[in-house]
Image 1 (cartoon, rainbow, N blue to C red):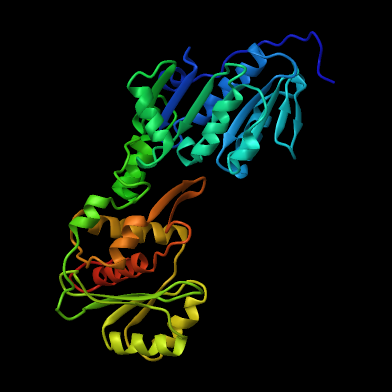
Image 2: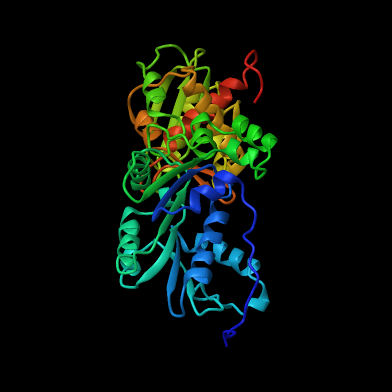
Length: 399
């Protein structure tokens, strides 16, 4: 039973000024581009609870919409930890719903299937990680507050310029009626006591500049979620070098992928490139013929371990590289730095295509680097491995 005629003392949790003002304002629509871990989720969850408890009536529905079910579960569990048992809130774990003491319902939803968002009358809602939500999900969310004139809060990291949230933020920034735009950077969060300055400095050193600027400075890259930058990639295009290779990087095909062999000369110019799909015996012979006694690094992750051992029995200078989240991040940082400083050169072929389509994604466990679904990143990996081998050569330091 929901407690009847029961009163509670409420004091809003503390927030720093920019965090509070971005969400708690009189505009119907608030859009917030913010640094990761700057407190945007916390402030919006507090706002939604206040909307439901202080302004809601029994039977009214309030929504929290995230791109995935997993992300909604995180916020649902956070709310469950916050609200004291004495309030009598009833939590439905399977439906991700909370019925508050006044009979209002907060429902934690996913935008994975926009068609499932239509139909209900919602009195206030939050679109979380808006830059990663489908535009069709926003359309559905806008429709469900039509009858109630309910307010919406949209929050997220910056993720390129090619998404509906970025466009909406620019319209709000230009003074669209009933909209307010706010930007919260990592420095704002440091000043507000939410983030540690040393942690931000470490992220600045360890992440590619494009990634850091989007995640921490709320500054968009010119290409959607690309960690290298389209302009920087195109500035590195040149003809295939005719000099001899001093190192090779190889990404060996697994299932539907391609085997890619990339050789770099002394000046880090691509001088050898092959991309193919062949049975292992033919692939092995191609690698042996290309590499000879030149230093070579091969992806030895998973099944690549036995492939690397096989190659090591045939070639004198083969080294394996195992990909993990930390090692891949370091390798992508190296590649980003080399492209950003125009220190590497490559022909305008599949290498450029893959570099331009390559993406990063910020998750709860860190930054993930991958090709978009249905595309390949074999050239990207081979080029990064070749650069790693080049850096390991005498006179070039050790990485």
